[in-house]
Length: 156
Image (cartoon, rainbow, N blue to C red; front, side):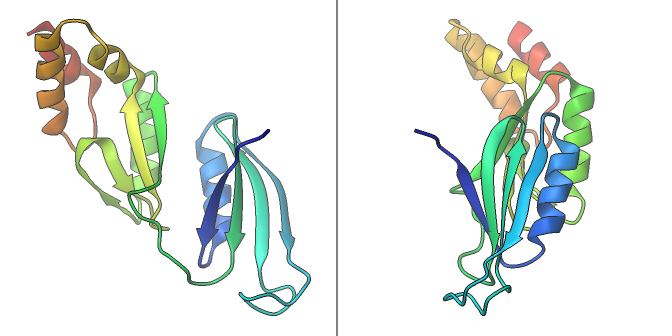
């Protein structure tokens, strides 16, 4: 059995997946092709499909005109080991998109991302509930997540 995430783009699928695979390590486009039969989304050749790997995870994409826009019920979460890595991804993905609270943003195609430090998961799994509460309260004040204030909150 194989599980693959699938994204539906109204337009600009190749630009989007090219951007994503250029930004996230261990990523590549495996194939892009046209659907060569008439289908509910358009005539033969007008619909494109792609297979790509993003951060070592398999994805498929389709560019087939409007359907349902991306929303918060699906997001791509990237955990970063360093603040520099987090800043690089955050800055690239927010260009043309919009930022949201707690490390969330929507890119220029409307896809939701969560850009978080790996350290946050470790801090949130701490057995000390007071520490977890302080870290959570600090995180809730942030838009882009910042490791140093999270570490400071953990220390009290």
